[in-house]
Length: 254
Image (cartoon, rainbow, N blue to C red):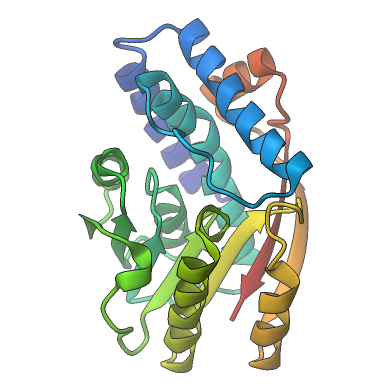
């Protein structure tokens, strides 16, 4: 990551830490992070590929997602878009599918010069509010709305899209509809980036989608990237026994 983007990440996380710790203790967030992590591990071991139910149903889990997973997702996207050459020319607009905290779309925009309009979509009202707050903290422009990502308006010419750790949360029918949307955006000249965990049990459909995307000129990559996470993410990750020192993910880009 560039120094200026790292500075923005750390400033954003400092503000998020103050915001979420106003009503919660670190110990409470750590317990919630362990619960979230256990649910994801269960998915990997059982290979069910199902949504983690209740992932944002408590203030502790929402804080854990914002303070631990969000910065790691931000760094993963930053690494990927630079290495894959997706920053120049800067996208006019970036559709962030299942935006969560807004980390993915914000990271791509910052890496490309912070000129892109971010269009965030998520079905959870907390995620919509959190993404709006993230964009304001990072000085980025955009719009965020609540809705199902498989029912978006048709893609516009040159509009890029990112689905970061999102497709694995969808049932098969909804995921396949989103995949078709992403292919259509690519056909209209937009760039498409999909990120998911390396654990294939969580994404059993990955190889099939990869074959279809690479047939259209896309590429697939696996990543293991050492990182220096922000202090709050390091503190939470260490307390919860999680790997916060290395990003492990895979991408499809077109």
